[in-house]
Length: 364
Image (cartoon, rainbow, N blue to C red; front, top):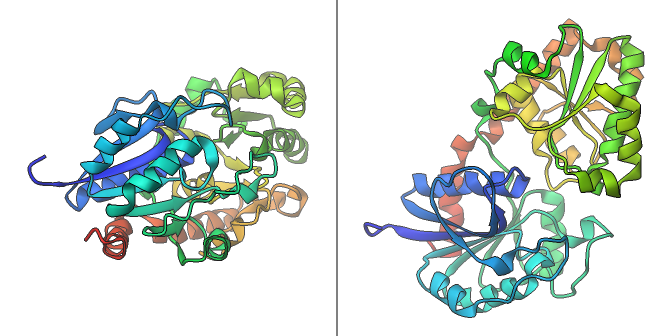
């Protein structure tokens, strides 16, 4: 290790396409820029090749939502944490998805500088399994939440300060894709309106709402549309009858699947959809802004915090109020203003933020 300090980033999944994986990677790259050795610790890893050290802890992951996890390997955890200078808990202390492992880490990490990142407090979704012990207190840790609304409630619940630290990202990563190549891959004519919905369609994402919006917009604009859901598994269609019906209505005007380069996804799209009932933040909104595409959303609670940064979205529930702007100078002006506003969240601001948080966590 050459004397570098060792930071463990602990999550249910690392290297996936979910928001926690994506933003945890941002933090690891920020720590690496500050001279740390970042290690991914997870119960499951995505398909992308690893770019840093990884340690598999099976008890962090269940094959079924809220299902039983493999037994905790206390010796493995003790060895891991004993060799660390910093522990970053990525949502693991917030939701009881790996309760026994999270509780073991809380005991073992008391002498190690720790930052607890909260993404999805359990009160966001009534369908989630409840456990009165969560979110965990981690009394010695520095606690941060990804939005101010949750930070305030977590502060009251835990009885200690929880700071709102907005997610940052590489704004340049989402611009500059090949629109022609991406649309050719999808077999799209120039007049087809492509609506990208870059989510895994968990129930709270309300993908059926976005799919029906595609049908409505086709009528309002009198143009063919293609609804592109970038992440789905068959079980989501089987478990959500309204989504299955919407796919039947759309027929060949619905596509599912990812592209290798996310910039191509956004360059191919004409609008980016987010129909969630709630989000911890809503990465597709800010990614769309960075890519020069209009975000079209359901008004979920934290969206107001993004809007306060100067990012404008269109309301999916009332398209007739704004659809006349599409492909006009007014539309272009809003898209440009969004691109300017989102620079405040560029990952280049992260090292300074991390340096301060590390000092407050006792890891400077």
